[in-house]
Length: 348
Image 1 (cartoon, rainbow, N blue to C red):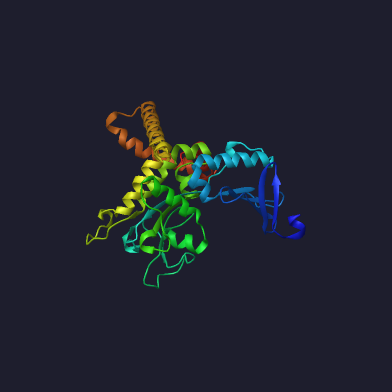
Image 2: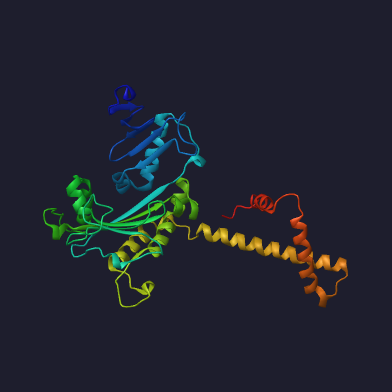
């Protein structure tokens, strides 16, 4: 029906209600609501190689109210309803966001306070929809640092977005949190009483898969806390000082709050081990073993040649020159031989 009319359609598939629309070519989007997810489907007969046939973006309200478990349950329910079989090894995590909302009417983002890795891009913006323009007004309403494919921090006026886009669900979440603390609810008309800043930490595939080796639900549950704890050390919001070494600048109190929330909320999702550290340890141990084997073989070769101890160093230098000539005369180019050897190891 959607293909014939090219209009948005609503359908129910085995108990799951979907709002379907065409997103271009043979691609379709199916929305399961603000407490669900956006599902993107590609025609399996025309999709580009290595592109995922199905991409799922979970809604913020689902994650804010139910966490990672709610997202996994929704995913499994929908996949069963859609009749799509899969195994865990087919999953790829491409992005994870973690947000902390802080009531701080006195705060205004300052790009000078961001301490980021060399080469990280920083942007300022002044409105809920202005994400790539420099500040021109009297108030900065947001900062963005980093790239979404890698590691990105966004600090912005969440109150302004709630008002502009009518997302009153966040007001409900905030007021419930205030009620638990015995405090009165927000009045969005009073900016000084309801100015909430969102610190949103985003990680893309370069971090999740390349550094942390996270792909499945189990990986997220085991290590996402480690990844976000590392994030808060790599990118920091500080109090600028006269110290020329920015790494020594003291943490801003709001950033310390973000660190504490990450530590508390994600404490059960930590292993304490960085996959890259494990890989590097394995690589170092293997290099040590190979060096030991090379030295042992060289000693044995010297013994066969009748070399005395005092002549061993000179023998090694001469023998390495012979090995170099033998490598140059080998019928298979050295690049191909190294590539074949690399195929035996998976340290990266």
